[in-house]
Amino acid sequence: MAHLEVKRKNRTGWWLWLLLVVVALIVVMMWIRGHDKETVAGAAAVDSTADLVSDQAEAIAITEPDWNKVDFSVPATRDSEITDPDISIRQGTDYTIYTLGENVLFPKDQKNVQSASEPKLRSIATVLKKRFDGAYIGVYGSTDSTGSPAHNKTLAADRANEVKNWLVDHGGIDYRKISVHSIGERQPIASNETVEGRAQNRNVQIVVFEDATR
Image: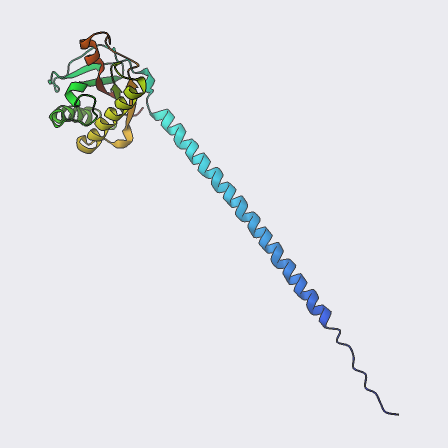
């Protein structure tokens, strides 16, 4: 009888598959853990950014003056360094108002500063830099009641912004300390029923708070 050689079955194959499955599970678990860490880190970064924005908002609220407290009917005053009759000055408790009429600053119903008014703006800027350097400054635009309220509000904002840009670009005023406020026709300082009153209501008023640390 011939001798038959029986080959033994290879029992190592299933161990290899088991090893591959274990390695795959380990890789998946590591990926999941890493993804969770990134998610937590991202959430922490968002929270940190939110806290920073909140802190900055609180700082602004603490340091910037209350612009709503400005009373444009406070008493008139004089300044030995500003003698131009086209510039009127009023004095509040802790702020000073410098006013220039529309006819001085702008052509009729336009927003571009006239070159003839630049010496007047320069004299105001010189005093602001000399006495109130670092203080907060608000530029307010006002109109009479002629035209629609929407048009007047836009025109007042455009004119106040033009004066602000001039003070920053040519007067050396810190852009971070100067803001624009559009009054439009809402707070007239004279009657809009007369030509003279309407002329007084068309102006730009530069308000500076004397305490630079506010």
